[in-house]
Length: 494
Image (cartoon, rainbow, N blue to C red; front, side, top):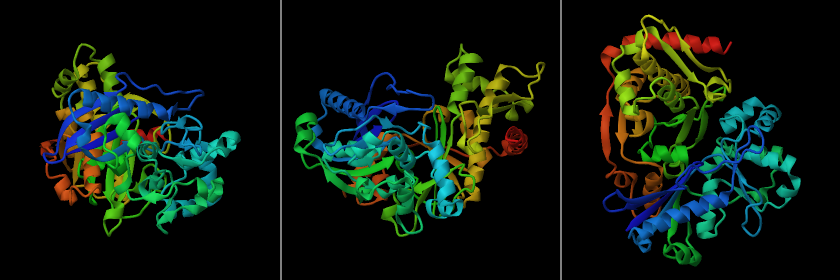
């Protein structure tokens, strides 16, 4: 028996088949083969045709079938998706416009207006966030600027809801998804009617809410004809990409943290304390397991734009003759704390963790006699680790006390230097696993369909590749360097 996992990103759509008995990935495919296009008709805008995601999904399923894998053995389907996007459908189920995706910033002013009008205290206590630039504000932008299009909307939904709709014909969403759109009231534990009322979003445009882990609908006969997946296969898991990344790493309980270090860096920690950051530098959502346990499970999300992109910039401009592995090895020859050299990696636009300020990347304290290429390369990786620590300190102030950080063996976590630096700075064990978003969705689907009877059974076969402990002898020099680094950040915010 197979479980099909679908990961709908803004760069590509990946599909994977999980053999449920062994817990191993037996096939996967990613489309398009080059990065998917993003339309930017004006500065700060980012849109994609949601139908393209479906086409990429179908291409991937057909590739796996062509490689000899029988899609008739699929018994559950799970979906991970790019968060905060807006998909709007008419009564025929056709998109009325391109999707306004997660990185589109046009609705920022509307979110700011809503925060002032609704009131800071009510937003922080009931929403645990500012209305910000999330799905509700994006829909309000359509209503204000494209009234003719808004009038055609039957249902609005998130990207994952749209894919599930095409598979099942059921237009539903989840409480987790509502929270990421800033439409969930954490006090009353229901839709945040006061946000919808402020933006003028009619109640009949909302999708009904189903559990994130549990049967949400069944595939249609048209899907069997098109993809070979049997009619009546349950779609039984749905989560945004960061909650799903945490789920895929078995990050389910308070104190556990999932991290990624691609172009941007993300830390997602689980807590049972419903507390907001007063400056909205991190965001709180319902965790994907929130409906399956008696106590609240909330996910605190930290996103840092300037992480892996800083490391790739260093490779292109400082060490173009080296591979990433070679660059990591050279960086490791420099002393801990890079002999006083600091890098602030915030060169990829406004940083939410810096209260939406754009401070730019900086090299601080360079000595043209002492410092050389390896010092710069190490300072880059240490600076990225410092930015993670900076955000995790904010999360600690909100009640999250991490003792373990879990990550996939990819991107920045391929660097032993980065892994050890981060573990030491955070005084936390780092566990590295062989998994990704599509496999996490596949595990979640098998759990939601009742094939796996518990999370323990679902993750019993998750392969741990390595464990990284803090380096005791690195602690003091890194703490001194981090203190200096944090002062430079604070100075840049004045």
